[in-house]
Image (cartoon, rainbow, N blue to C red; front, side, top):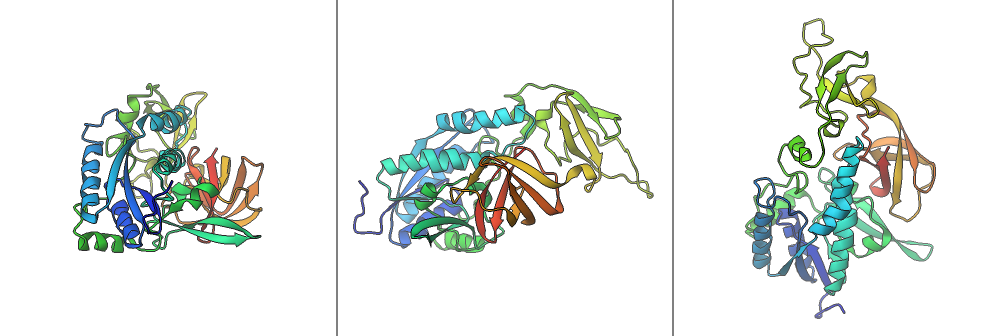
Length: 371
């Protein structure tokens, strides 16, 4: 049973050791909640390496909890992460697609395993340091929970949260949704938090800042094959289609191949454009705006809609990758599990495995996996 203690209720918040979740925990305490911090350990394979900072992150989270006066516990979800997130991550890469593990981690770990664990600790609600907002509307006499973009659009993370459902949203708080990142940093400095100047983490823990291909090499076999131009000219050898993503410019190993040159003697850069799994061939093109890199429509599967049902066909906006500006599009549902999007302006390097996320203004409607 939840321990209210005369306050607004018990909130269990994921504290990662970063500045965002630290300030979010402080804000909740200021708002009158009974706050318990939970530090999630999701990866163990090379926890002591220079690339995975779990130990330091735990020390930072515990230090912050001490400063702001909240209890904190550590919980190990490494087995769940490996089964539910990492296994899918490897399957997708093996199939030549480029998955987004952060989307799956939110759906399977932070808002399933974490949520279940928090409820077992007597939580009324959970909270995270994500930049997003939740709004509850009355629809036909019943509450309808909406996921909205953060006020600070430069930090908005609704893209990663688009697979949340009504039950998960109903029990989640996003304390940072209404304030800009600059204010979060200012609060951290004013509280003299030990991590006030800590850099934002990039990527996911089990990869960190390490060379991505070196990491994948440990789990997926190399399978070299030709790198070709659209005309069929062989310009190099790839190490395995799993190690490349559409739109990739660096690490192709063909920098010395000039190809088509401009009138001034310079040449356009090479980009990964297509993968032919049947013939183990990687196709590259020259120039950022090559037709092979542009798509005016896409198909997506494994659709997930926040309201519980697909929005009606019509005009919306969508992102096909994080940190992309919203692009006007038309939604054409195909079935409960799949949908199509057609864009008024061609999209660059639409990548199978990534998420296509649909918006109606600031409202995140949901999305699916690009096929």
